[in-house]
Image 1 (tube, rainbow, N blue to C red):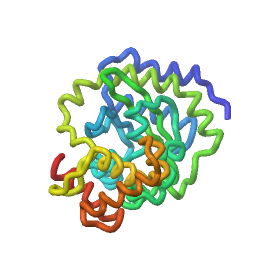
Image 2: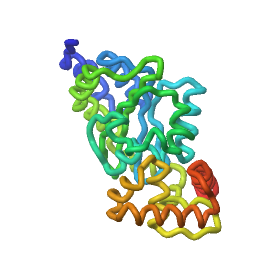
Image 3: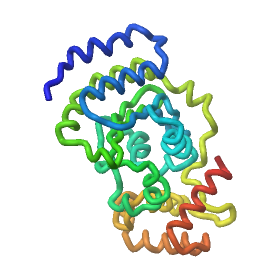
Length: 260
């Protein structure tokens, strides 16, 4: 597929001369431009800053889809999302979900409890750090009926990354004020349940388990032995009086509702 990036640049540059352009218009132009390069079913643009609830800047969802992809996501599951983790590192560039997901992502409680509800075959994101410690992530999604992005699609989208980054920084270069006015930040790695006292290490392990990391992956991430991870996991289950990851996820989400 031959693409005239110069023409795309000139078309998009109209936005650069309009500092007052609204989020919706900029988002629509970006989606239209990227749609000329690769087919996708949905587009959403989120802004992330630390553990603050992400701000939805633009999306193409209908009402039902918005409830799943945005409303439910903002209630807490975003903290377990591989895209959120990459945004807060930050990890600039164009990334496929499969490149960022933990080793047991598709067996994780995050996947089974939330991500499966999206009915996506694949997701690819443009990760653009902006001022104020925020990162804007433009996600392109394909539904299960559409199938995966092809290698040629990925190549074209990555070639467009400098233009996408320039447009995003032009419109959303300073999001600090928006996050200052947003809802309160939930506590870091919230403790499932209100009574048990968990250590900071145990709280970190809870998030990694729910994200889909194996004990081996958790050990590498935290710099501890795999056996030590397993001991921590047993202690967490004992303290919380639970026996499964499903129960662990329920405690985790309940703590977000209570403390968020």
